[in-house]
Length: 515
Image (cartoon, rainbow, N blue to C red; front, side, top):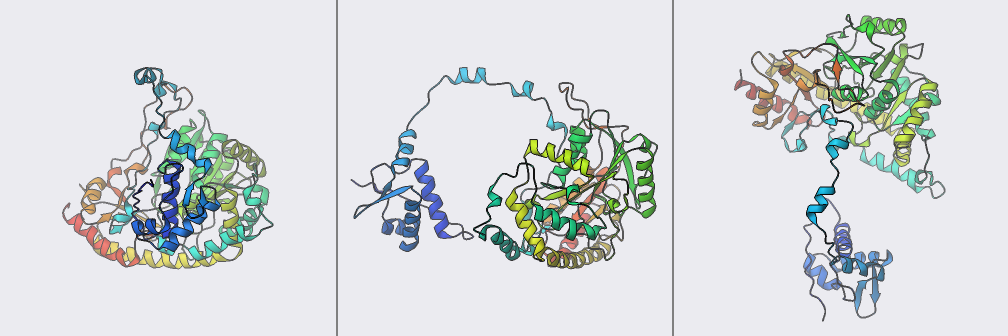
């Protein structure tokens, strides 16, 4: 007697019906829902249950037949193929065992883990940020502005050539030559940088680049000068390598050298738009920093995280453009301007260092996905990247003008360190007796999402005595500002442009209940 299967799918309107029906049936086959030697529901019956056309079900059944999941018996229907009959039998097998004995022999992971990552807390961002009416979150894109049609065309070019399947092959430690060439000739010159192909390494984003550099150049004896406030994950990465971090205050001209600066054998800076304040390092500070690096045989890591998203009409060139000795290591990414999910960046440094970084990368993950590299290479080569950058900069300039005017009009009591710099976020200070935590909580009641700034300031962390391999994130002195809890950041790319001003008005209402 045929089994009366009852099938139900809660369809997603953003996906095709055929795709979802196939996914449902494949899952049912793999978990053993269908009984061997019993016909699956007929096309007519399944289409009635799922409320889709018989043609949709028929196409799915035929595709599963072609892929070996099913066999067809004339005038009888579709059945499980022999390869998948065993799934049903195995689903009934119960593996017995003494649970108490299993627990007693389980490893004590706390004693075995040699690196305590909990001492390096991350910056917490709400996972449901898009549910806010006014999401002033930094680092997330406005999805509707992604050049999807052009990216699809670049992807099509990669897979359409029936004679070129190089994206399927293991490249060991090599990068896609076309992407390296496009970065060298089309991307770097815009920042005043001229490099050879063997001085460029592709990474999985800027953060991956920083990790590679830290593992190669830093240990317990390293002293790294960093900006305070600064990029939290850079603190964590350098701390994981065991480095001692020496904080440097940031003012309206950028990083300020201090008495600890001569002790540093490495500096990490974001000179174009300091993260998170948005300040641009002045020419005088740039010269002083480079002179110190040359004089003390130090290394400088320049994180140009928003290089091509910089929408100033005449942006200052990269520090790497001024470097004649090879002491500046340039790190950048496509993530900020295109989409964070792409995770594609690059390092520019001397050939000798790139050679060592490539070997280290090979030991970690060999190379970034070849197909992604090829898609990005075609995206640039076809001119799609340059046209997108122009549109992005103009759109960003419009957004900045809107939020700048709204902040000046509705919350003028929130001071800014970077008053005129056209950065990709606004770093603001709350009035007296108002903490950023209080503001975030009250703003959320008005549908406004803002980010606190306290996590960007350096804190001291007690050493983990159980770990012998990794030093904690250490500082030469306690430099947490007593005002650290009074800063917050407003991003303006993830929010609809028409909602920026209304969102600032709502934020002002949140302040009214606090001041």
